[in-house]
Image 1 (cartoon, rainbow, N blue to C red):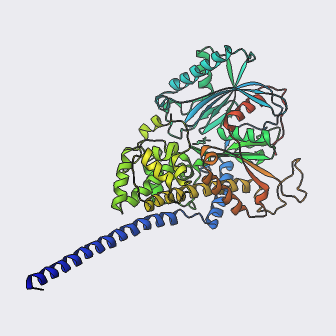
Image 2 (image 1 turned 60 degrees about the vertical axis):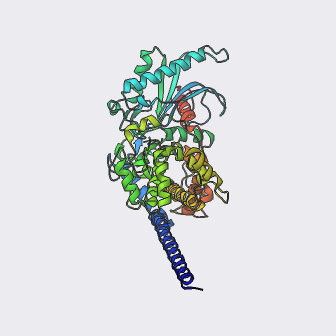
Image 3 (image 1 turned 90 degrees about the vertical axis):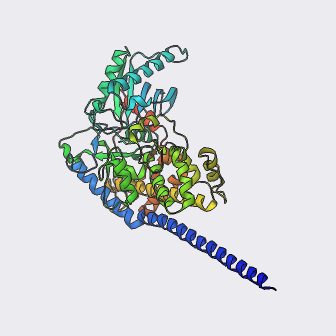
Length: 544
Ligand code: BGC
């Protein structure tokens, strides 16, 4: 080899080494970035820890707050609102009833024919999105729109020959926002949730607003029952199974109600009911405890939310469909800062609607991934019909190569070729967020059971028998009715929740507690309550 050849060989060797060194250093750098990103996820997962110990603390805190909310007005973040419902449907309700169900993404009108012994026929049913403008305008606009839809519904019915004519139309009105009831059929709106914001409505009697709008349209209808969706769900649950003592909604918002003894409602001394009990609407979305596993993402979400306050609706912001997608977005964004490829990917995602990723789980538009959600435009997104959220589909993709995740990223978000390892991380983020939400809701449910002595903590023989006597040694069967898209249509969520309830209660007590889906409870239950509160001839059953 001549001098030139030798020089060339040396140069090549040096160049190869340099290239190799660059490649190695790039790899090391990208591995470090990847590790940092995985670290962000690990830290988030740790922050979301819902160990059994922590869940028990949440159970206890829920129990304590329930006592405090019953003891005095404003005594707790839990409002523990009276419903004036002191008896629940038992199967003897009869007649034709109308229902107006308002409170989430859509609004529904139903007509039901209640027959003998738990037979019911849904005669007619319409569901439609609420035009976004009406969610933030005036109460007059909203109720005019509702009354005109009702009028069209009644007209269509009048033309339908197979429906029996109804002389006086009794209406169950499901209104799923915090309301201070003044009777079974009237109540004042305390505040809006779930992106609704019609300021002039706060402090007004909700049933009266509807009644006026109906009169204006010449509609001969009367609000016989004004109910929260949890209360409707409890009513339907009880109609089918008399051991039902509580109901929970986990959908766009979250809440629970249960049957309380009147003597335990200390803030209303002297409250007397025939049954000795009353359904209490907890408004648990507002529950707060220092034991809740709160991360910096939750704090940021709260700050950017329409109702920012350290703890306002703290429970709801960790559990309900309105917020879960946004937590996922925030975590992925934070991870993306650590990895260029994901960062690029997410910039593209960010310019799309994240709601495409999560469906109505995120009910507001996100123009850029960096932007906090813009809630002034939130209303425009409520009109979307609930469909199985894509977040749930991605989470539940069990194909080895996460085919569904890739498909959704490609078809819906127009991002092809996302590497498998990145797809896996996205699924993991969904899992952490969903698992925490489901387990916290489970702790909330056990908190209610504890409050009413059905969690077995005072011994398996605790709890009164049906006729009020002492238990004969057998743990009483307890049913909790559940409704809401997250629980009903997101099977991973449901599994996590069911599993956690069983874990907290333990194997001796868990078999006595049944969580039962009460689909359509918010609507049908309102018809049942309208029936049991409009005709004195209808029998009622004593509350357990
Ligand atoms: C409302 C509750 C309602 C729940 C579920 C919450 O945002 O405040 O009244 O029951 O959503 O719809």
